[in-house]
Length: 343
Ligand SMILES: O=C(O)CCC(=O)C(=O)O
Ligand SMILES: [Fe+2]
Image: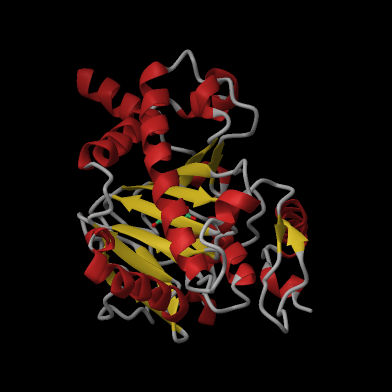
């Protein structure tokens, strides 16, 4: 009886993927076609993401070299890993463990998280309500916390302080990296401080439940991020993959490193010098995975415009960009993104 009870309470937190997507699963798993192949059969495993030691920034004789490594990785890969980033391990570990507590709440409670946490925006998402087939379904759940909202979580001191210390450190790291990348484009050294405050940055807490049909669905659909840049903290499970030279490449988790990627806004600001690269997460059959992403974003009214001529993109505000991508997702299932803003 006890075992039965604990089994029930253990599963209590799991989103009802099978029940909700029963029709899709039946349809797609029943059909055998070329669509039936393993989604991950073409993934390369060998390439190492550039690994950059940020400690070098503190040494006069190595600073320039390190800045060059950062800007080269941003233009060749759009992705890199950083070590010695100055964020204590304790803060990163604490984030993942608070995250676990949050995701292990009963599913019904997670659905009304914004009321529970006193947040202004919808915070909990899972699956994909618009999915028409298995390939459009993300086998994952997530909480979004805007930085502006976190101070209002006064009934949840432990979670609030964990989110605050994580977000504060991430914001500083993101801003420092962004200023370096801007400097390498010959922009003013305080471009971000001067033009985009207050930021609309936010955190996404991700959980990828074990997935019995892991070769048929994504953990997270292929996408590019809308941010200037994104910082990812992940556990040791792995599953993130990125597009490099037309092929999907596995990113092996490095427990000492944070993963940085360029988002659409920086690609536009840099006139395509820095690349916002498509990435996705592979579902795993047996192990659950946790990751936390920090999206460094300007205020919604900030104008994104490259100083380079001829400009590849027309100028736009983050608000306009979001409006367009939301419309495209609704109508086509794909966000489209920067191609909509090409001149
Ligand atoms: O969990 C990951 O590895 C990637 C998450 C991600 O791409 C995102 O949250 O935008
Ligand atoms: Fe992403």
